[in-house]
Image (tube, rainbow, N blue to C red; front, side, top):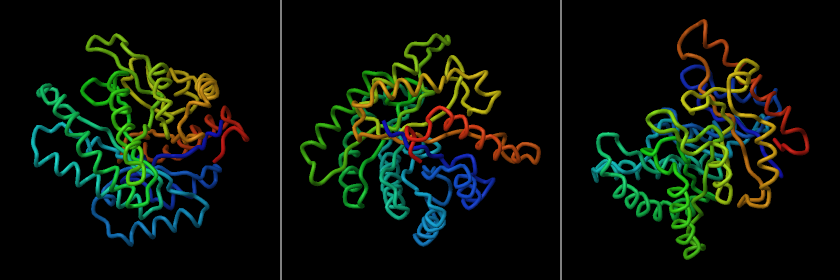
Length: 308
């Protein structure tokens, strides 16, 4: 099973330049970036993205994916004006993805406000109605797929196996009926995502959720977490001691399900928040945290099994 290794750009925001990140990745032998949704994504001119793409490519790095960083593209707002804004956000992200040469762009599907649980089902319908048009827009822009990420809360859809399966099957049937004019909706998994209830009891563990998503999984996030999915972090030596993500177990799970991935290969992006932002005594640790986490990933997904 070919697993491409990449890095999501989130931890450099307001801290380091993309040139800094690309140089670090080149030094580590990693050649795939997932572009997060920082300020320039929504407002920068097209030429800024063309320049960013050239900056990556001159270092043999490809911006192969985009994915939102702040849950800003979820439907279920109970307000047509906000849902229209959400759709415009998706359309903007699709445009940017085409400029940087990404194959896909994604976000969460629905975000239900905790004081408005009645928006759940209408929100899912609004998502489905809008997504059908967005799949066509992505095809016109030259993308290969749109993605959504199963989350760790029943208020952030999809999260449960039922939600994931229902959305994937509905959107899959739609794409099959419009294969010449749309791209598929696929999943960006996350090995650190599971569901615990209000008392902290695990309802759906991260391993079973990850495995059931594989038939629709185009990409995923490498990320560590604790036993109730509360905090997320990377894979430096101290983080591996306190985290629950066993990388050899993940490799075995992927290998055992190699024939079930929809693309015949998958890209895993290291997604970590990094240290506390905006402190001289913390920002300087980001380089070490990224390098040590990448080294930990490559130690398990060895040459020949990981293709960067």
